[in-house]
Image 1 (tube, rainbow over the protein chains, first blue to last red):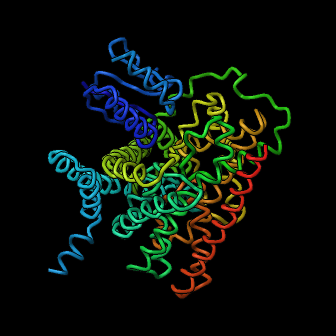
Image 2: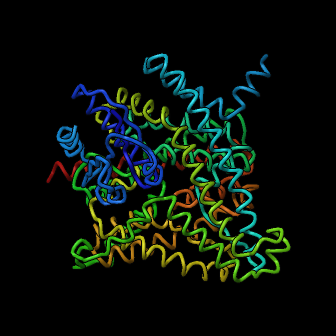
Length: 87
Length: 454
């Protein structure tokens, strides 16, 4: 399973969220490959789940991708619930 | 043998950074496969960074030539990624060393001072390390003293900037979970301050209806492509086909040439970003892992989009008004004898948006508008003032974009200028930093006391 965290620049925020996702998955005992990138690259990169800010992920809507949209990307509680509900 | 180790191995920035990653992976007791792949990827990231720089150079020199032909003044496009990539040839080893030891200084300061911030925006750590290396080396420092004072400056900035903005970050987010760690902080601080002065009884931006259509600019590649293509086009129209087709494009139609050159610049930025991403993939988590162990109750200082979700409309308002200030500045700069700073969508989007969020937090709509305009003027004038202190790097047609780089660069450059002996300016810098920490800690004590009294 692969989770791709997306932000506009693919450098700062998505990197932090990636580290948070990894920490939460470890607690939940779920094995997954987690990486981060920018919006442009994410369009051509395959992943089982795309995770990021809701307004940004609208650009990835195509009916086929599994999107995990967050209102506040820095909120670990919201992130944990989103992961529990989607995986 | 010594020569091989000192010059070829430690003197090659790509290998040096790879060794840092290797060290980090070994410290975390990572699996052997991860150690190998992580180290190789880090070195490759650095090589990619250099490749991106080569792509950008040609495009930048064409832009400068066209701009000078069209307007008879020097035009500069601020872009952190580009200037840092270009600097790696001459300043790479020093940048890497200052970055590594700067992170250690950050951890120590977070451990032993009230400023418990861990600065996790790795690319900005690298950019600031580069700026410090350039200015101090231009001022005649080298070797151990350079890395020593450079990392103290960097590590101090990594806690002081988050400390400066934290009271306002609390206003934005309502929590102490994280603060902003980004070297555009002075722009946000000024924006929040302006907001608090002009924003009496102004309603929040979040009650506005703002079209969502500008969201696509959050995609850096799209924003850079669009800006550069338009900039090249406009400048080409002013310069005219004669000059471009004879001097630059080798006969290719001047507009076709400009279009491709604009996108070449954007492609270069895209490559550099990919390189930086790979380069940091192991270093930042290692830094965070060590910091978490050493600093109890550390507060992460995060990249600035972390505050965007708290005021979505302020993001758009802030970007627009910061950019407007950038356009106005373009006409003001030559009047005061400075180089023209061409406003970029990316710096204005990210820092303008954040300035909008902070301005809105302290002063509603009026705060968001005037605060982000203040930021827009800052990120136009500071890069122009920074050019003369960058030495040989000041002629590349690009420079650092965000506010803190400008302030730190101009201040450091000034100190280096006044105190010509290395010993003197190292002492001066240490005294200044000690003074700032003293004031900061005293202020911090006062706030804690007030909170306890309340």
